[in-house]
Length: 236
Image 1 (cartoon, one colour):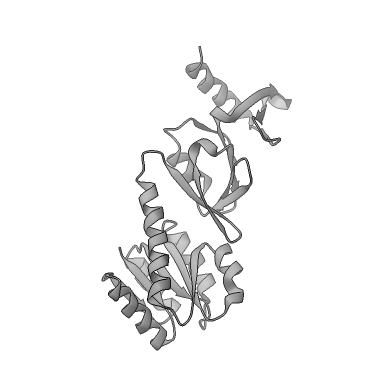
Image 2 (tube, rainbow, N blue to C red):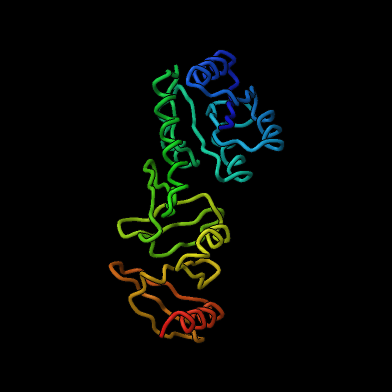
């Protein structure tokens, strides 16, 4: 596991590296400025990035956005002396945040959480890691009703709520290409198994309703045509 640590405080930087080493992690890169970190990101892909929130020139929250644009699979962990940053940390794509002074126990728990998420990716039934506020969801594909594009994120709709993933809808389409999902609009991917009914609306588009939720999704004109052809090949 390749780990990046970014902190402008030398003592905090060395403390976290020492703790990670004691926990058995050796492939660690230290950076004392966000600029140095960005240079490292141009050369290496990191599995985990520990970011101090309060740094000059660029905050850890801003750096997290840059990291996730380069590699959306990197797990972001924030470190801070200020508990009030927690909500902002989760909104910025953080999986967890650690309060300074950081302990072996807090790092151990954090890394165990990451290992569970990594392990879940290798399961036969794929799951998707999504977030809403300070809650993290591990969503099974069969629980998804539809996926909606939202700038550089997607919104995943499940029965109870919706949650966000830092991926573009085109990336999600590739992940779900072998499943029973279909992109009916440039902004929507639907789970075919969750469809309750469909009806034609203006310009030969389709309005799709789902079992158990009240949401409606309207296809594009081309999306409706392609979806009809898809269903013709899937149904008797």
